[in-house]
Image (tube, rainbow over all chains, first blue to last red; front, side, top):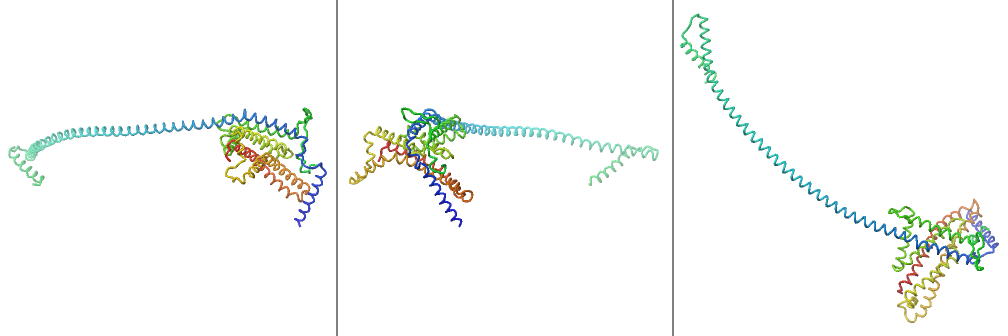
Length: 196
Length: 243
């Protein structure tokens, strides 16, 4: 139904347009030679001017621009390559310097360590010597002390015992007999002490 | 009156009548659109000549069209056609802009007139023939004698070749003119349907009209391209004679 309506209206409008067209003087205005000369004249004028201006002024500029850009790009690429090479060289130099410095630092460290170790060794040796000396001295002293102390102790013991006896009895006793007794006692005591 | 699909092709005088030696060269609407197209081309491409390393949009447009046409010429006619670059560039741009300005409603399509396209085609035909004779002398006539054709067929082939050569300006001009005229007439007819069918039935032709507008813009570009590329091919025949 809708199709029919559309078709009918299309046909109607076609009839209308045809009738409107036939009312005109008809045909294609393109084939009316009235303005042919004028069109040719203006075509030649405008197209000619367009061609002259484009070819003389505008197109050379555009081609120049394109070419200069091309050359600039090539130039830039060249400089970029150069700079890259430079950078690579510099990086190599840098690496070399770093390596050298590392080796130097290692050497320096090693030599310093050796020095310090040597120093420490020397000091230790001298200290050990000193200590040995001191020990020997001390041992000697101790030995001496041992000897003298026993004597002193015996002496003190005799004196004290004589004093004691004197106070107890109120009379002096022969010192030599007293000392013999004390010595005998102290020997026994010492033996007990030393576990002999 | 406006319902007549051919009405849009009418040429009428704008301003006073100009006559030189009784020849009417008055400024018409056709002349107006030729001037507008040329000015538009000049303005756009002049804006595109700004000298900067990174191009702006208009510069990019003009440089892209430059390389597009340059590539088209070197592809079809070889490096010998370099001197004719600016002519083919102007031709392509002129036809393209005339076609495109014709797509604006109520404007005038310069290229929908046979006389305009014929003058362009005839100029190309004569120019190409002259170039051919200058480059190859009478040897240019070898164009009509294809190699590898049996002797018996030769008279027939030569006649066909001559006819096809002579019909070049007609085919070139009629192709552009007929395409433009047919497209615009069709759009006008469908536009008329929209009006006559009204709000009820006008939607279908309206859709057609919209689709046709897209198609016509494509055709406008395509016909300009075909016009330019055929010029290149004819130029190739004249420059590199190898039939």
